[in-house]
Image 1 (cartoon, protein in one colour):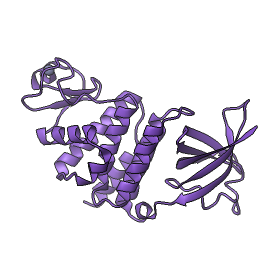
Image 2 (cartoon, rainbow, N blue to C red):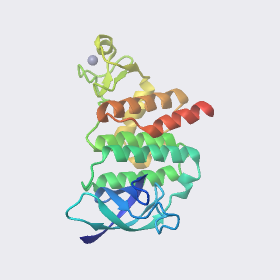
Image 3 (spheres, rainbow, N blue to C red):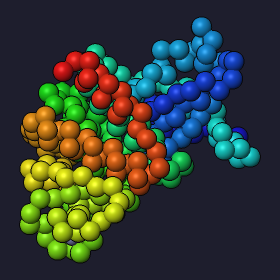
Length: 252
Ligand SMILES: [Zn+2]
């Protein structure tokens, strides 16, 4: 058994046994799932530290004969209070953390992915449009992880999109109007403005994502595109995205 240290962001916890929790961290060494012994007990030393989106130093015991290593300590450096104090920012950042959890591979170091996620959290903390910063992050993180949607040309006939674009999650990108008419799979129309915005999100630097502005229709189209793409490409559903939709129905 050896003691290891790294920096990481807590992306998820769940109860493991009557006394313990599993804490999932996204770190500069990749995704790590660690057992936090005694974390469910009222006076646990982990009590205040194990809050999702906390960033800090992770110290853990690595067991050579098991996949489940054990958390020794988590010293929080940044709690991202401005995200947690605002419902829009928090629900957006929760969606990003869930995406990271779904897409990242355990134990595979990914420093660029980690840098992208930490930069995203710093940006969303000060952003007035956290949903747009999050959509930009989602497109870039998916692309970085090998799930890049084809937004430049029709994914079926490869010609440039001239008329109205359509999106087909199953095909993995946009379709021209004539391929969309022939396609039998599920697809939906998006506006040219939405396509342009998503292209800029995908190709631009994350640091510029706070400059995006979009109307309600455009935001809904981007959200639908990303949600259907994730569902189709990873076979997983983002629970936090459904939560965002439900609050928007209550607060128009
Ligand atoms: Zn086509």
